[in-house]
Length: 106
Image (cartoon, rainbow, N blue to C red; front, side, top):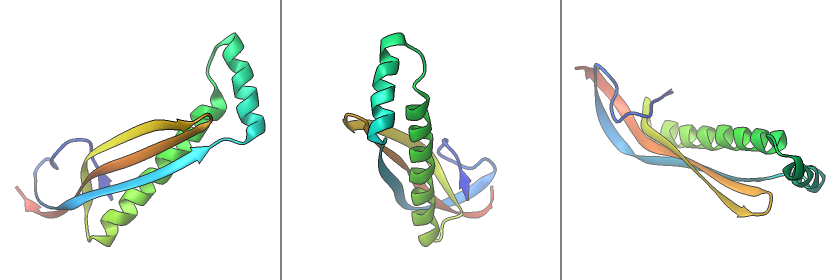
């Protein structure tokens, strides 16, 4: 599956099939969340949260791709990510874009 964050596929004609999205709410184990809170006292990267967001983006992207494949898409264009904090230690990540079918060379 081709994923692009531009609105077209260079050199190709495409047919838009519709919006696709994937979403996940991810949280950390209480013990790791507590240790991350301690890290805020000294500063620096909170690696457990970085890894949590990486995993969440990967899962949201996979769910978006699965939805696009179900529609018969060859690619998803204009891919975007959004995230928000739902509560202490939990984040929602959404991946979305436009599923397209490649028709021919332009």
